[in-house]
Image 1 (cartoon, rainbow, N blue to C red):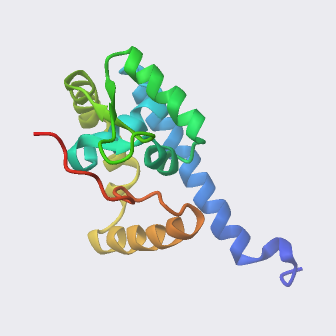
Image 2 (image 1 turned 90 degrees about the vertical axis):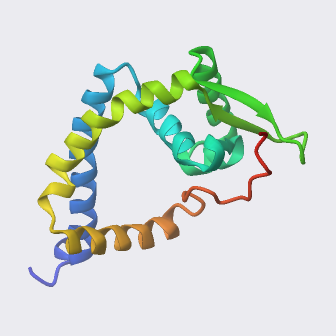
Length: 163
């Protein structure tokens, strides 16, 4: 039965990736719940905090988070309501808008990061040698770019940020 498609190494590779993702997500979600940040809000704030000028076009944020434009807009509305993000108009395209992290959002995400990094170290990066981590990150980025094009930060040029 070793020639069976059920034993194809591609099924094993995808299964290992999914099991790893699910295990990490469970541990990280618990920690984020403790700081009052649902996963989607954490991901959005993290993307904004790590982006040039701490802002992204709503369309780019939607792409990076794998949300529809309306889903990203609703997420940003929740973050605006909590005072963690503001909307800013695009000077070069009045139809476009930016999500911009606020000081309160920056403080919340900054407070969540130390415990987040501890979990990442314990269950992911700490179990790999530095060269293994570099290789894995490169391989995951290669696959991510095929299955989730546009997920990388800075996929569109930003207009000059206001001084």
